[in-house]
Length: 48
Image 1 (tube, rainbow, N blue to C red):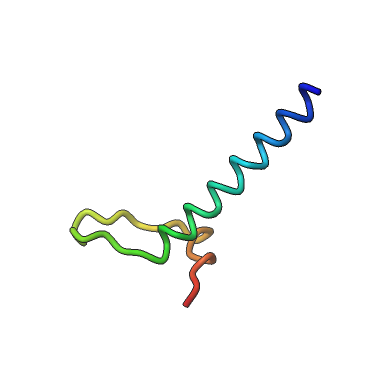
Image 2: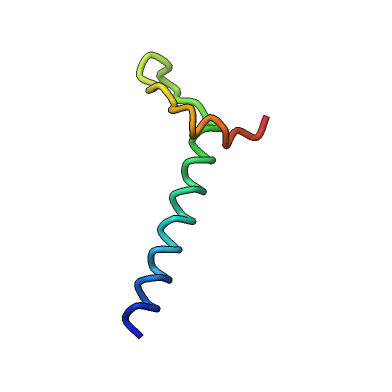
């Protein structure tokens, strides 16, 4: 029971993290001078 719960929570965290990374890579900061460099692995999630 405990292992199953940990697996579900872990899967949810991974899914949310991947969604947030793809959402952030497709948007830009209003203050472009403060925008950080994007890692190459995250750049692969671009939709354009």
